[in-house]
Image (cartoon, rainbow, N blue to C red; front, top):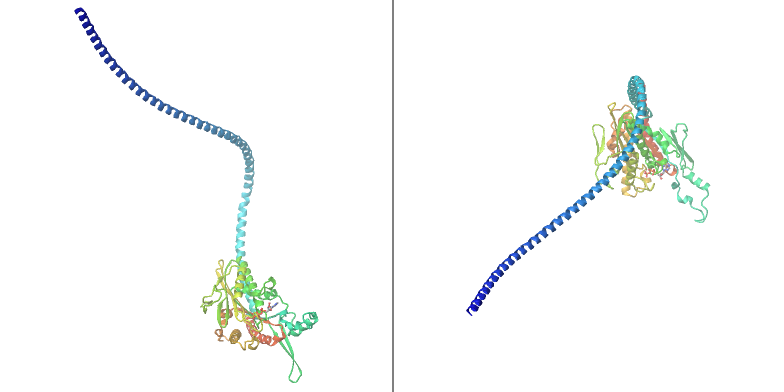
Length: 549
Ligand SMILES: Nc1ncnc2c1ncn2[C@@H]1O[C@H](COP(=O)(O)OP(=O)(O)OP(=O)(O)O)[C@@H](O)[C@H]1O
């Protein structure tokens, strides 16, 4: 039993020992398991890290591959371009090879030419010296001829002036205007049986015209210098009374004379003006006698008047003289004198309200204060200036002519020339004056109208002042050197003082109406013009004397 007990105890001890051993083994195993689990965990983490690294590496490598692929693609493109370039270059090289061949043949041809030119040059260099000598001689001749031209030009000026002086420094032309249909009163053409009856027969119209026409004759068919007026009336005793008046002028123009014919006689004055002389051309006559037609003219080429023709002539002459070394500067002004007041016709304002004064300086230059002086560049520009001026002229109606101008208009063209070759300068002035109607008070219809009366008195005063000045100038020319010239008696004569005195040239165109009703006015005008014309003779004589002496 004891043995059993001992055995059992031994067994129990063994069991306990075994239990303890297995417990410790279990502990050990658990510890090992924990360690193994730890290791497993750490391995897992390491594996995860490694996996992450591989993935990162993988992506990097993918990127690298893409970069390499892009690189390859770009290089392929480069290569393709290079291939194209090479192809183009090959084509260019082949073209240039062809061109070089052509050039080579051209060079050969040019070399042949150079050789030929060289030979020609050798030949011409011999004659070049000869030509240089000839050129020198020709240049000398040209310089001599230029001097001859300048001398001839100075001589021409002298002769031209002499001719003008022989013709007289004061000249008078007389022009009779044609009978116009507007001159025939409507009652003379009225149909006898009312408006339905036939118009009057042509022979009646001729008779009417002949009745209206004054008896004016032009006996001098050679020199056209004479005009004769005749009238027949009944005396108080019932006897027929015949009167005849004969006048002679430098030139008489018949009604059919053209503007060109009148200008032909005037054109040389424009030349004088470019030569440095002062020229005045006046149109004188009663209202409606053709002054404006003569000076300004009509709209068509054959009817253009003396002002535009003279301006064109001055431009032509100054252009011609340019070849003789002259350079010209042209300027113009256009004004009217109405009731002794000056109006600027080219001013900026439609109506001139400024007060203008006439000034003469010591050098003989006349200026008008506050007047627009316009540089003139072409005849066309002057024509448009004239039409502006025309529209501004004071026009008032009178019984004689509904467009009647009751003011004097003065267009002044100043020409300054300089010749650098000869050192000469010249200054000329062309005044073209359309005078106001010269009719007497009763004819102008001014009797009952105070304003018209003042106008007519002012016109008559200035016209007689003009006649007095011209007459006094004539007496002075005849040797009365102390003769007082009454320039100050009117604005017109004061304005034109420098252009009327001294070595200036004056032309008066007397315009006459062809109507019998205007015979008395025509006689008054003819007497005024004769007074002026007698002055002409005095001056002309003196010039002839001085030539002979
Ligand atoms: N030689 C001519 N040939 C044709 N028509 C003319 C001629 N002379 C004048 N006339 C005409 O006669 C009319 C009157 O002429 P103009 O107006 O020139 O007269 P005026 O003397 O200037 O008158 P005013 O003093 O009113 O200015 C106009 O119709 C004009 O066209």
